Image 1 (cartoon, rainbow, N blue to C red):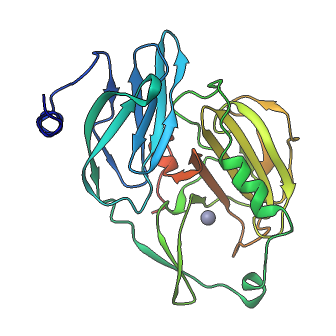
Image 2: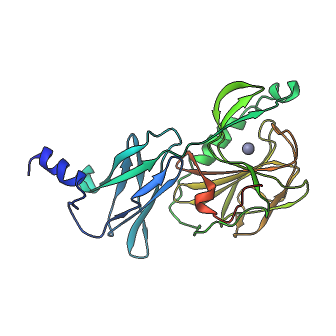
Image 3: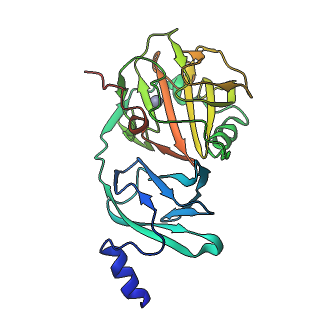
Length: 271
Ligand SMILES: [Zn+2]
């Protein structure tokens, strides 16, 4: 088959290569694609991002994040085998998530809050953690039993001006002092009182999945500690860049912030 004919066959949904591949067929911007493949050495690629698959119960499995700014439409996920050969291609549909805009009344003191030396670097290192053991399973538990008053993906304005940022997690409207629970099992990689993020706990759940919990009044976990789903890792506060007590909960897949609601569907929106 010519490469053009092969491409058209793929686009028509024809499965090429080995059987036994499964790719989530449709997601919204900011969600995560799940991939399954036969045993072997595989990587999965969407656009410029390539991630490894891992051996799990006699299969190869992986998660592939779709960035919040990914153009909606039909796209290809390519699964690469040994030597970079194409083992499988799947067309996926990325739907427009239509994330709204939210204005934040940032005070002078908040705007002056810069990160401590090493703060941004430590958070980036956390989000890019890739350890081979999968300690998580779905669904993730909500870290607090409260509703979200700011959703993932919301375009942020500060005092009416576009900040150029979108919200990289959920804001859960929790009272100060509420215990914060690990959303899934993992290894605590960050447990620090940072300046911008405030009291911060970051957990590496394995295979490219990490979560963080910000603005904590108190930290109840140590770096290097193994936690199970539901273990208390800290307490809700308003430290760092926060207008009042709440929990900012972030979930990253291979360094890309994704929508935690897809992983923890039990988190309700505030009425
Ligand atoms: Zn937030």
